[in-house]
Length: 306
Image (cartoon, rainbow, N blue to C red; front, top):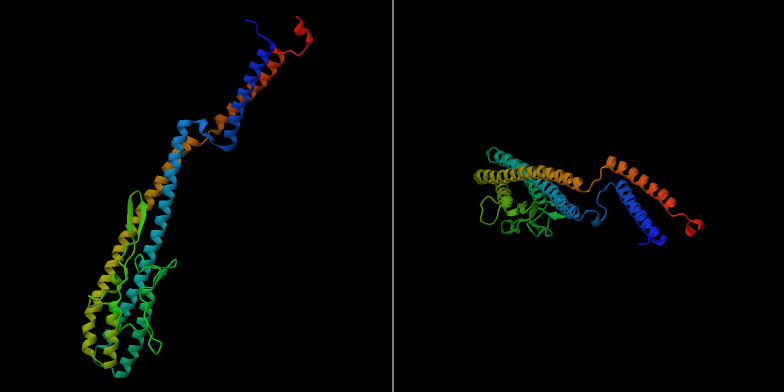
């Protein structure tokens, strides 16, 4: 078989292109720091890479949900602490007013402070986080305790016991198939129409008793105040337990994120030292191929006449 000059040239060009392509791939990996820059670089590795990326993306979203959950729980605990302070002050005033040694003028003064406590409690019951009312379940865009005002400008809470807040639960997904209800309804905190220790009913009863100078009724309300205090504390305990669980979940997600990142790095990240040596070797091979090719394919006319 006669080897023509065209065959030599074609084979030389093919080998040069292959060496140049290998050198280019290595230099691309050096520039990007990644072993896999396109699926053809490692068809098997790209499947693992995409899987790790998807799991990392999900894990990051779970971490964001956990952060939001902790913010919500912390805010709820702060608001309930404020409500507890109002109830504690209400109890102190009720004890002071029920001693039977206070003139009506003193009871009227206490009544004025109780009215302010009621206003404060209404503000607490309508607390918002990021534009959402925290005590109205899934209908967080509606004010749960929207009372009309009397002629003197005060809020009319006569029918406070009839208010029904939304019972829907707000669930945050904080892990794979893990949903955590994080909200507390207004009726759970402040009481509903079936409970004698409804805070707004207690306030109205105490205010009327102070106006009438009825010490016996004031004494009767102390048990209701204590009952509601215990319920608020129980809710705060539940919130604390959920917060602890979410913090444990946060630690678990952080560890999972580190592990997934390490696995992804093993599949995708390039070894700079190895690539630098490999690139230099390929560059030398390419230069040697050019030099050898120039000697094999001589351009002089004499070579064709031999």
